[in-house]
Length: 189
Image 1: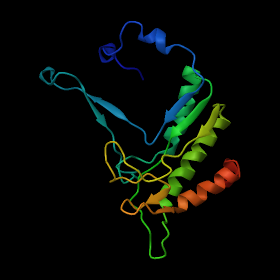
Image 2 (image 1 turned 120 degrees about the vertical axis):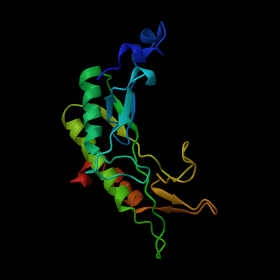
Image 3 (image 1 turned 90 degrees about the vertical axis):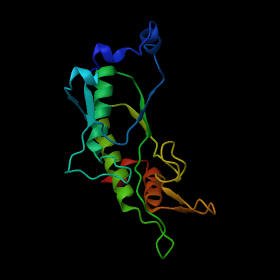
Image 4 (image 1 turned 180 degrees about the horizontal axis):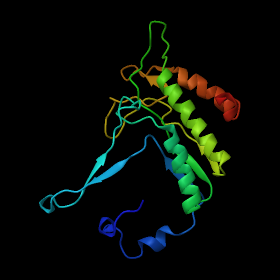
């Protein structure tokens, strides 16, 4: 879709020429799809209201983001086939879940591991369709300060005790280490 002209008031003269310059690559951040539906509202309420759709049949992360790996494949395909940006990297992809060390001191974050596995598999399917995806970066290496949520959301594949700074690789980190060691997609099968 495209934004209506009245939604583009922030675009200034010269902007389109500047952003049309060739780039070395396109970085894509993907966590969850954003599905917007327009709802007609009375003129007294100014603009149409856009609603984020949350379907009951989907899994959600701790932060409330829908888990939909095929959204990544759809996005990569659309970017490639409609806009032809050339080489692309997934510069951020990850999920927040409230996992911490168990009695054995291990962090068994199976939901995050599944999220990453499914999203990497979706990226592989995009590559098979011809998308020139050159790299993938997990968000994030370690639990950290998130701009909108402070320390409340844990996206890292390494668990951090914020009091002591102790770090424990989560199961997802150990799995991702294997993915990297085997150069990617073979372990996804």
